[in-house]
Image (tube, rainbow, N blue to C red; front, side, top):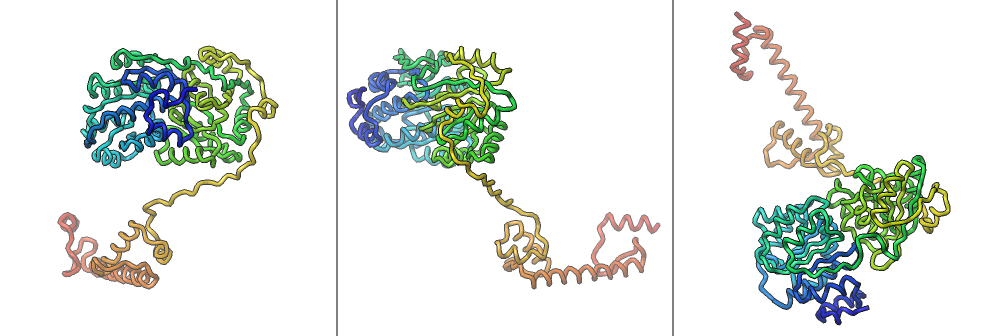
Length: 499
């Protein structure tokens, strides 16, 4: 294979790659680097896992270093757009070591989190901006970022952008970068408007198609298991119970969450990944999957885009996708960078016709294999079975503002530290009891008893006063002096009743 040095990659970058154990280029890197390093626009067509992130990261850093310019707040010099925050984060893991070696500053912006930190980084000045279109469009609208000084623009997984409806936003963003700069666009396919992006923004691009938009990866094995509906869930559990990492796909967020929980309770540690998760929950689940504490990731299509975890040995289509591109993208989570991987589609008899058409469009020719959860072929695909892991229910967080505690709970509240709501209640009681505003509030039994006694005394005093008032004039009688003033409306009602 070809070395990075022979392709013209600067020495300071090859040292970074060597430290990571990378000395020889993948096909897409070998095909594109001579063009991208010279500043040519490039259209790269390659599947996920083919090494395209490094193919555009190396020339981006090399060209910025070759033409040094002062860093300016809010004005990045290079822009990389990705459809999902997971992919943006993954790209940053490749770019940042290269940028650090060159003294370049990188920032990643995406939605679902507070923009305060992102805004601070942009105001401090960044050289390379990695962004999801939605958040970038928002920041541009707020004038927090300005693209008028961008020198290199990269659009990764443009076909996913199209599938997610981002192309109008992408066009609005690319219209704000200077004309004549270097553009690189990477996409597995050129349909759904991606070809129009190429025509509009790329000038005489060099096209490199490393692999066809089909799942013809030599190291990827495809299987279709035909199962009775009542056995499907148990079959999924058997496939999930191996020792290696596996990703399982479902169509809906609800089903993904439900399946992950069911597998975990069945002794197979699993986490879910879908659009309803908060950013913290997504990061936590991906970390669990990456570090091996959860061997199974149950995901929806969109949520799993950009998930790059090495060593995924099995992909299972629990719910077969509706169209072949989704099948290809799902399957691309395994057999990455030359590793072996197996892709299993679980189908019922009712789904057989749809799955047949799906596989034909994807270029897959494999037989349907009738199976049960205990079939030998299932155990063969599953591999060595992992020991069951007892399920531990997550600890629920206590509400930040608990309900008002009864007086008998005063000592416990002190031991655990009063919440803001409890402090407010205690201060209110203290003020009613005649204490100053600045007095410290201590929830002790003695104070509770005193407070209760004061409340009882006040109630008795009020009862005696009301009794005297009733004796003098009944309900409409005039109150005694010093007993408090009646409201204007109350006095009028009293006079009317007296008449």
